[in-house]
Amino acid sequence: MPHGYADRNAKRLHRYTGLTHAQARQFLEDQPVGRPRIAEATGAQRLLEALVFEHLRGDVDYFAHPIGIGSVVPRHDSVALSLDASSTRHDYPLVAHALEGLLPAELPEAEQAEDDVRVLGVPGVRITQASRESLHLSLAGTKASVILTSGGNSNWASLVAERQALLEADGYRPCWNEAELTEPEIAFHQEHAEMSEAITEASWLPSGLLRRTGLFHEVSTAYCTRYWVTWDQWRVELKLDPGVRPAHNVLVDHLTDPKWGMDLAVDKLHCECDAPWADPHYDRQCTVELSSPQAALVHFRCGSEPWVPGATRRTPTRPCSVPVPIRSGWAA
Image (cartoon, rainbow, N blue to C red):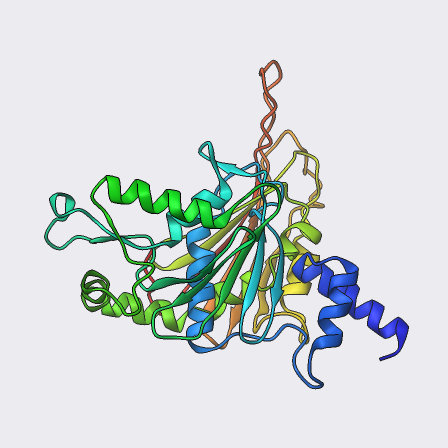
């Protein structure tokens, strides 16, 4: 591969994944000829990535990176995520929060109620390997693979042991070491069969976003990125400091790029960035809607609110939100 061409591709991969230039070049050199630069996951791999993306829950303002993921390595049969070691969520380290949100455990019998969820975390998620440096996750009965790493002094094996001891002391039964689905996990999927099917059908979207999380800190100008799922839509909110111009056009260009992006296309654009009356002291809003043959709609919304003089702390309140209605009816 010509040196200049390789460098351009590495620079582009850096923007999508957050990998360093050297890491991006090595990743591309290791890929077989003809494979997409960012391969799309399929089957159980895609579902696991979608579940991980959802339950990491990017809903906190002050991560070192907007959604707490510094970089991602998007291999065709696995994905490796580097989580921010310095980030905290509700006074808990991000790595500990990841275990809390992802690892399944059966509720104590006293806390189980009829027609209610009996499992914390994500039913079916399994630990295949835990060491000081990393945590390897899969889905029961599959070869899906998501690898979590983190810098600093994080010790994944110790964190898992602490989480297990805490749950067992309170009467919970951890499920993440079981080879097969447990009875409560099977019951969950049976009782929520329609929702489980919808999650699987729509998993291409959160999986694709997870594989391109670098865009949220290498291209986006937001200092914070939040996302969550409602009954019929994904919503991603990009929060910007007052006076910072939203990079919605370049972000959309990257998301819809035919070689590097996703199966999305611009359907509607309304931008007020250059409106004659636009002023940081007044609310303004931009919207971009993206459609897909896979039945999804991405809707960007950018707005700003004034900073109140005399406040003891300046709180940036300018959001750019991205609702993603899932027409298949994926519930939260």
